[in-house]
Length: 144
Image: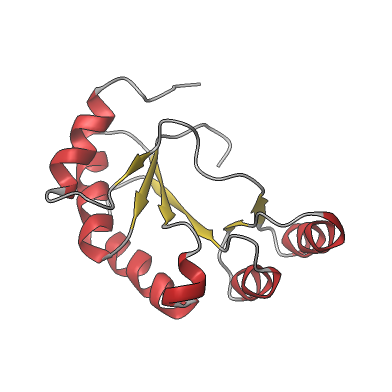
């Protein structure tokens, strides 16, 4: 995740597929974020399945995924252990340092902030593909 990509927050498989379809059509790489704290109420297995199935449905989409664990060090550690490459953790202090060391050992990335300001959240979207396409066209994409 070295290039800043537009961020799209998804809450289910249909939204993830819609966002990836729009990104593929636009030819724009994106970062899909799980909903804030989703790891705690949907579980990591569910999130993994959502993002895996979305990637399989739209294999031409250049994307990466961030699993949002909010302040749960236990979930962040489990996500890293399960091989999620990008894990968001809002905690501080010694737990953050410990998780960062684990992420570094596993070639993962610990993200200590939420999605960038201006990210698209599809929580109320009736048409995730259309809304994602409109978001990507609005010039919110920063190319480096």
